[in-house]
View (cartoon, rainbow, N blue to C red):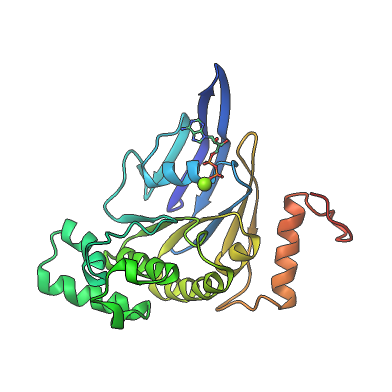
Length: 257
Ligand SMILES: Nc1ncnc2c1ncn2[C@@H]1O[C@H](COP(=O)(O)OP(=O)(O)O)[C@@H](O)[C@H]1O
Ligand SMILES: [Mg+2]
């Protein structure tokens, strides 16, 4: 049995009297400690699948089990990071990181200690007493990551967390999150529509296609440690993903979009 088992999941919406399959017979098994990227164009059901995994939404048919338990609601041991950071602007950076620990009933002194530890992990200890609006987007997302790690979650769900950032900040954060997540040994399910981002981060890339939302294939990324975006191995995996989307014929000579 795998840690996360998605079995024949469909999610049907009713639009103007017609059925629309946001997810259509999706099956996938994920092991503990894996970094999985759900990759695909807008509308292929990535957010729908993530919301179902995180317990925010129910599927129409099929089942999702985590550690053998059917997912019915958000679980205290799992956290979700969104594109808009979700920080409270009136609280300091440190108090934002303590938020989840407060819900868990962690005593104040321990909360502060844990918050400082994770602010150091994301390189923001100097900003503990700043407020989120004083920080750049990249720094705010690092606060959100510190807050997620502080509760020692089993699984971190991320829905296009870097989409609002400029390209350079985004590349830096991709490298950072890749290092941090590997060191912390968490299971990560990360939604993106960016092929390079998926190859930088994932152990396996789940390639999804729309109308109806389906898993086209799963591509393993056999690269270790921090990834070199210019290496032949990196580009080879990137090419395989392009081919999977049928944007590029298998002989690699031309692009069709
Ligand atoms: N609440 C909803 N009602 C109707 N259709 C929805 C709803 N949520 C999502 N959809 C549709 O389901 C499809 C998949 O959406 P989504 O999971 O958000 O895609 P992605 O995250 O890959 O862009 C889209 O076509 C979207 O319009
Ligand atoms: Mg989405």
